[in-house]
Length: 444
Ligand SMILES: Cc1cc2nc3c(=O)[nH]c(=O)nc-3n(C[C@H](O)[C@H](O)[C@H](O)COP(=O)(O)OP(=O)(O)OC[C@H]3O[C@@H](n4cnc5c(N)ncnc54)[C@H](O)[C@@H]3O)c2cc1C
Image (cartoon, rainbow, N blue to C red; front, top):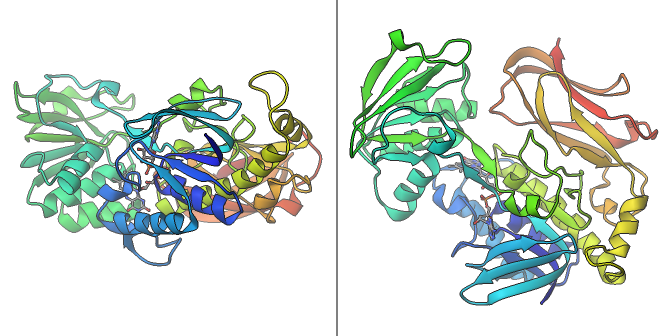
């Protein structure tokens, strides 16, 4: 089978990318999704809060997903559901398996990785005590309540203040579960400020910052947890421990981008994001393979995921056209057309500076490079997404190159739970190669 553009993952990132690839003229665009339905995580997010930026409206997750599913379907995007991608290769083949199609291999002009992320499980934490029934990741509990119609328990404690846990604190409360507490080891919340207000404060749910769960109690079913403050080294202070009775513990302790396929394909990954290193066209280190959404880095808002998908889709369609004109030549795994295109493209580096945990993209295509895919993202503005390492107040977000400041933005508050974006005028970036753009958060 052949496809101009194959998209792996039918969540909001993959759907936006497929729509954009079609709009940009790609003929055969195929979305491959392992689930029985499209939309990724959105069908289980039945709360509102989606689409304020992209549509200027407040939608639920299923409503937001439905808009893109409808648009993709009417644009002629093909969907392969219940189809699990097993392998992606550097010569742009996708191997997948499904009960409907059996084992299939697609030769593609371009590939877009949009596999999203998964939740960090209990095994990744050191939680002393027994292993009774009643411990769930927050996303699993969300699926149980919103899709299966089953309550996980009657009295809950939530470990971690990521957005999924905060949303579930409110959801469980609305369903009649007593949410005893949200416990967060850091001294600041992990989720969005709006979720702290709307999901905890509005429902009088206590949030214990600088605390952790020091012991799990119960033989068969969970009976309670011990909670303790932590010292500067994040070690629980046993003398200050207390017991909270509960039959349910939800873990909301982080999301991990799903990059097993990317790593096996030899795509360069950024240890800070857990996702592929990408250019501002969302192209990975392997020519013709793009990535977007939570597989690149964990986003706070779905609107930003859609923006990435749109860029990746348009650029992938342009790459697919180049690939169609210059068929694979030479040794296996090498595409002469795309390799030579890559060789004439020049990219600059973007690096995190003071108090910046990571930046995305990590590379940018230099303005003035006359290559087809660059056209898709060659608007004058270069948008950089970032997360701070630590919360800070009254600071300046600075983008500089070789000691010269290109952009300064005053910020009243920055928080690791909230993604930030800064725009740089490409024409202001000096054309000398070698120097990196550095993004820093500094004192005012
Ligand atoms: C509980 C929760 C609440 C949220 N609340 C909000 C909110 O209020 N407002 C907001 O703006 N955002 C919210 N978000 C964030 C938003 O939902 C995500 O940012 C967005 O869904 C990420 O999109 P994605 O397409 O990258 O990943 P996903 O939605 O995770 O989609 C990835 C898709 O890839 C598929 N896939 C993975 N591997 C393979 C494979 N090998 N083969 C085939 N298919 C594969 C998966 O099955 C999945 O369908 C929330 C997220 C969660 C989890």
